[in-house]
Image (cartoon, rainbow over all chains, first blue to last red; front, side):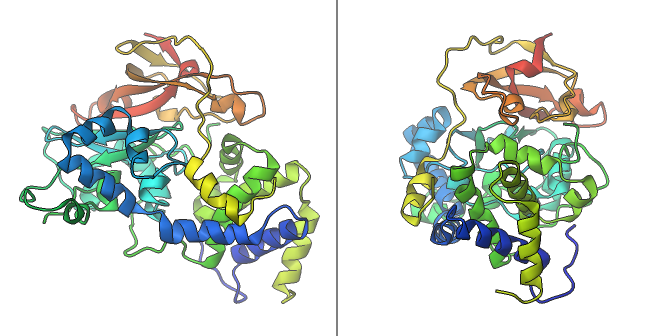
Length: 199
Length: 103
Length: 115
């Protein structure tokens, strides 16, 4: 758990970052406006609404779903989502028999183009330790309970493939539009700690 | 490396604690630290693998107690110092200056 | 190279894949049983300790990628196949866990031997 910061108004890490940014800028090695653009991109432009669109389309379009399962990188790129930390994508499908869960035990690997940047809990020690050894316990903490007959399949992102869970389409959604369906697809359901929301 | 980062299966770390409505960056410095990755990667020539290994070498207690983007700062400083883009003395001097209210 | 703001969208959209365009023969095929090596380098590796010595099955061959163990230390890409390997939960954690649950881990060619 991070130590609370005491002392002067600006925290130690904030000063450390400011120091590095200032020195590198003075040396002409970085452009602070590029930092601004990167911050803006991941705060405002790239996030789980991207992945939700991909999932919703897979739910309504069986041909798209096949493309997604056989070449996820290309299928996701059809939406214009691609690149950094999503160069080599794999989509794994939840079914009545299999529930998928994604983790990176060794660090924090996560599919940025479809989900944005990972939440703190995904990157922290308890999740990284227990997603592989006690996935049902972790799922329970998120309110997800699965019968013993369902296989929980945990994917440890140890290489450069990035994983996205395709959650099951909830019941009672037959008349919903693709846009409405996308609203049911939560970030947590695409990591695999929960199912998609009920309508 | 059989380091502290190799957490799969470890016991005693407690429950997963999600934060409700969590912002992408909790403080502005986290956003700057995040953005420094791409900005330093393109000029310094280190690999993502080297970056990860620098984080793995953080002393274990500090690894567990410090926050995620603090880990990134360790890695940047190590990769950049190793390549001579910045020195420990330069960094410490600037940190001291900023702490005492300097520009 | 200085990263300027106009370069950011392109960098974000393209990224930097670790795939290597090299013809490297795979040592394993889908369906093969493997045993993870007792690999304990003091240097960088992407083999999690919990897999050492465990028996699994090759489920997929993702193709050829740079090898992190060497790439982290400036020792070259040593391109090789990266596989999705299936391990049962019980194989990894013992008899107290579900007999149905499984782990799928991305494992490099150099981390395994045939079983």
